[in-house]
Length: 248
Image (tube, rainbow, N blue to C red; front, side, top):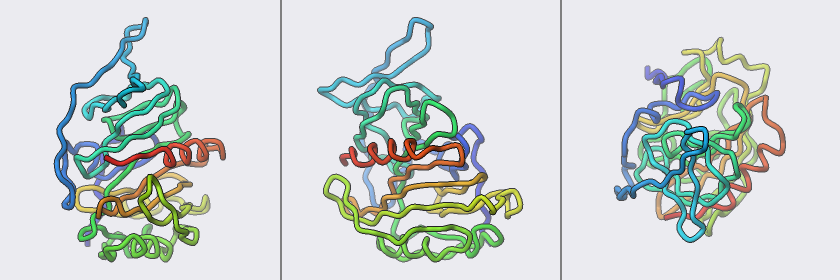
């Protein structure tokens, strides 16, 4: 049996991000390493760091930072499980962790990121609550979307075609019903997926929008995570962020 990995609780707001927080410049098995640029930051009058982005050149977010607020602008953020990055429009006051996890100004009102779903090492649990033994998902975007839709516990909408920045894929809405108590599950969490050293689970009720895409031959998921504290506007804000994405 393979059990869920534990991640540091400071990883991001109200989520378990399996293995991803402590990873350095990890490399997807289908990706190539990319050079890091020197970060640009400003210091507020109170002495706290903050990031801003030049309209002429999106700011590449540094990977090793703690939570740092951002002014509205276009940024380059890092994918989980890869040393590739992407561009995205970020609203004012959002905060970034480790150059990867974009968090709404208020805790519990949204987390946005992009993760790799490698074709040869993405797994789902036999039962997301009761049995975290893993089985291998097929290599295509549709394989993953349909497999998630058939998972016990999770409520997943019918996949529909979508494109972000010209790259095709499938869009689904994902919900963990409030009647499911993750504390009563194996390891106190409901499994989403695992992919080698990276993976995802949740310890609270969940609403999400996932864009599962094929980008330059790699399978990715653009993920907007929300919880019972989220509003429709929170989800719509992250949808606008997803629609602003361009790929390196």
